[in-house]
Length: 262
Image (cartoon, rainbow, N blue to C red; front, side):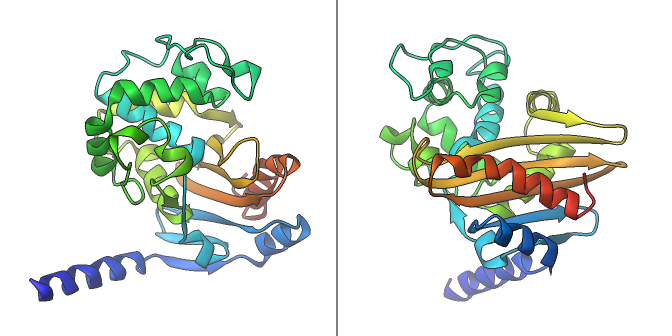
């Protein structure tokens, strides 16, 4: 049994190291110029190659915050917690940090403004048992949602955690619609996180902010489809004050442009 466990750990480590990592000096300069502590990683799916800045941090797990709205939507649709992304859910009537969150709405509108109470309602409808099965099925981060009582907070304060590298691997499967979930549901989630598009590219993404509106980890994750290729990416930074939040998209887009993806 001990030998089998050792072999399993070795194979997992080998698999984690299989993808090539290329350090980008251009992205490093962007982060230094912005006076931000963080990481950015781009995954070239076809080449099985990572390009980015600060590999150690890219391999470090943090709470996913509102980037978890992507798998939350997928799991909710797959178990029938909602019939579709436009089914209206109640926010609960409680005071919220942002006035825009104090409104009943469907997932399409809720994900666009990162409405936390709507997604907490979705999580409660999914329930702890089905949520555990869901995160395990899609292999999301450490797959730990904690006790049943944490069903509305596990992605905001833990114990669920995921690394930037893991985010890109998960998003690569969603982009290719190869997650072990119905393809029509994956397609619908892709639709509601579409941000921008040009002549030969389309940008998908979702932000996240731990401890909003206070200090915490800020995320921007997504992917670019360009010339029939898929480029998932993930950025996370330390948000020390509210004004740092805007740097998520600023640095993310600048990094994508530096790599000639946008």
